[in-house]
Length: 171
Ligand code: MAN
Ligand code: CA
Image (tube, rainbow, N blue to C red; front, side):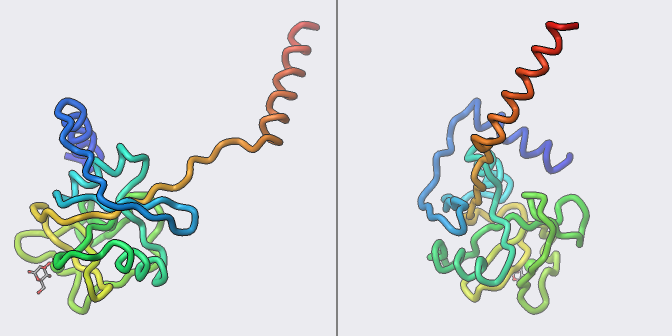
């Protein structure tokens, strides 16, 4: 099953059986809102991230990596992040669709060990590891602000619609 199909199925399940609402922290960084979610599997974490209007966090640079752990990392286990190779083994991508411009794998990782590991975690040494589908770690969600048209472009759009209407009348 495709990753997006699995997440859609989980979203449907969450809608039928509302068992989520596990946001246990939040903070803002560079204009984006981040949430800390209570422990559950990576797939369930992403399903909840989507209901919050985002995805599991995309870490673009070392500063963001440090900030995420320093802000949300109180656990002995890792924190789930959006990096995964669920679609193609060995090809890690971000759930947000952003390109991978920074990585911080611990030495020897990702190793796809222990029967298969597709999901990224960030740990207390600020390093990343791939883990399997049954781990129930806390996770960090990143929500980018929704872009609304600026008043000036709204005005231009209304003006264009107005002239179109005028044109139609004349035809
Ligand atoms: C555990 C898991 C793996 C990791 C190894 C490293 O088995 O966390 O993901 O690769 O430890 O020894
Ligand atoms: Ca691993």
